[in-house]
Image (cartoon, rainbow over all chains, first blue to last red; front, side, top):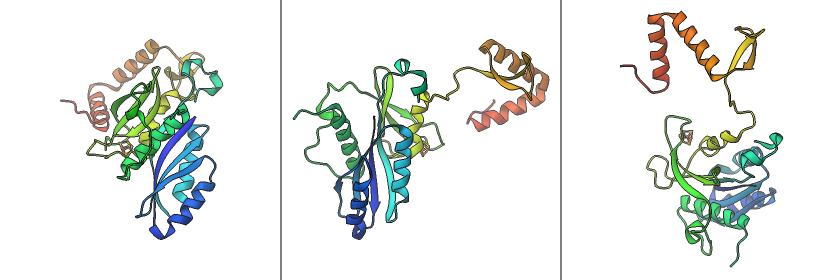
Length: 88
Length: 155
Ligand code: SF4
C-alpha cells in the first residue's frame, strides 16, 4: 500500500478543470482547493514505482505548474517476511 | 469516528500536504490526535545532494514506512524533492548490493572479469593491495580527491 500527499499548483482559472482531470486518475482524490490555485491531493498505488509514475503524470499534465510530493507512506510486510521476489 | 488504518494514513497525508499549503483541513483526524499510532517519527538529513534537507522518517516494527518533509527545517520548510522522499526506501530494493562484488575470472581478480560475490576480508585485501601498488604520492592525491568529493579534507 502506497499513499502519498501531493500539493499541486495551477492557475486559479484552470483549477476546476485540473480538479476534474485529477479525479479521473485511478487512486487519486482531490480533498481541498485554495483560492490561489492550490490543490491538496492524495494518491494511492500498489507500489512505489507506480507512485513515481503517477506523480510524473501530474507534473506533466497541461495546466499544472507544479506537483510536489509532501508525504509518502509505503507499507508492506516486514522485509524479512516477504518472498524474495517481492522484496522491492 | 472509527477510522480504518488506510483512512488514517490518508488523513496524515492530507494534513501534511495542507500544512505545506498553509491551511488546516477541518475534521481531519491525524497522528497528532491519536498518540497510540504505532509509527515512530525521527528526523534525518537527506544525503542525496548538498542541500541536506531535513526529512521526517516514520518507522514501524523496525521497518521504514513513511517519509515527510520536515516543516520545522529552515532549509526545506516541509518539502523534499522526490529523491528525498524515496531515498530511504532503497534499503528495501531487491537489487540493492548487500555484499562486496569483485571482478574475477577463474577465482582471481581480473579487470575484465565478471562481478562475483566475495567476502569482506577478500574485498579489503584486494583494495589494500591496489592502494599499496599505487605508491605513496599517488595514494595521497587520490585520497585527497576522494575526500574532497565526500566533503572531507585530509589534514
Ligand atoms: S530532498 Fe532533494 S533537494 Fe533536499 S537534500 Fe535531498 S536530494 Fe537534495
